[in-house]
Length: 309
Image (cartoon, rainbow, N blue to C red; front, side, top):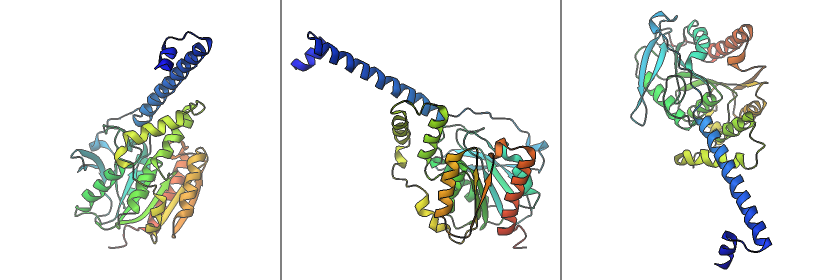
């Protein structure tokens, strides 16, 4: 009690110094916690640019398709019809992106007779909520597959998946557990959503502040407490044996490129790796066209739309 009283009402020089140091420590800790809290809030609530589209005037004659989520809510996606009874390719946008950003890839796939489906993940585009960087989004993709498989105009047993960073993680999660996934391509995928948190901290420039990484990681795990026992996806990649898979790296995101390489190494055959200079969203028109040709060729080879006709 005397020690506490001395710190609260210091009378000696040493006590005054210790009291001052404690006050500085508490202020620094509070400041770092505040900065970290604000940063994780920004990461989990990225800026949204929900553009409005009139499906009646869009190329490809898409139709709105709703599907139910595990929490009882619903999500709306766009279904671009291809050859009746053909496999469906589900295009999964990345973090800080939306379905409208990948429409040219959708068009390229549809032009080759694939059915194509895409939607906005939680906290992105037109979808409300907070992103979990892959945890909840995995359930969203599973729900979309189940809804599409109930249609009579698609191949209900064969789906292809494409995903970028967050979408890539979700694709890997689903591909390791759903036997209907016949081929998939992932661009700058990662092994665990916590890794994207660290990537975003580095990108913010605040990683140099002491303990920001730890505070943000703790906050992210606390927000997603129910997923505390969710392991990284890499130990389950062995379940994709026999599924054709394409991994893509980009030079502009070396940390995620390194993650993709490790996922590629840990994946069983058949597999292939490609490297690009820039991410899909930042590509020039020519580079984007070449990238789309790569994706289309991969699916045509491994999941041809006319295989069962």
